[in-house]
Length: 230
Image (tube, rainbow, N blue to C red; front, top):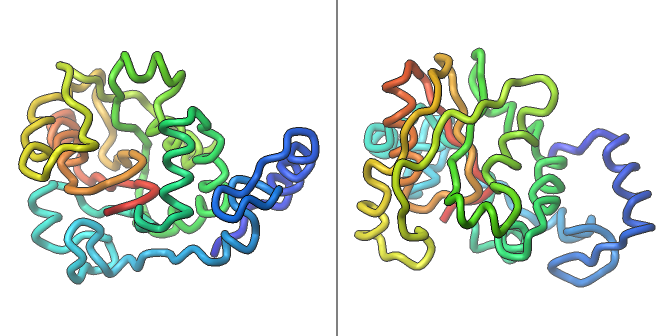
């Protein structure tokens, strides 16, 4: 596991004395995950396709899924079925705690960036429903993008929803594949190398629709980064 910078860890330890957080798995007072539960996380291999589970060549997607999604690769470090990861994503998405995502990326940012090929990468994110974002107060995909980019890499809002869609959660595979068709449009041109961020990837439909639009605005190589897959 790639360790977070000492300053970030020390800062969180100080804050947790004032505003204690209980581990989402074991309940121990520590952080969103205690050190012991962090150690139990299993990182998915880059040579396994995060969509179908077949062999991939160090880019997180098999040749078939790469062709279907129009993505150069995908990085999804964990299985959503892992109780700890599921709890972190839900804490952010449904309980309005974006810091749960920042905590995860504090520990795994370097590992994710290391998997990106050499390039002039800029970050963007899947746009959320305006209504959901207003209620939640943030877009979890944007939180992920900005935490990954840090101070060194650019982040741009390059996509917006052109129409309202049903939430992908709860839809069967067939409906997921059609629900977001034509749902995104570009708000600006993008660079050649683009990273699209989201919280979870399942069928890859959301990322596929986003990649389709970004390619039309000038992107040549698009990688997807999510916290989890499955």
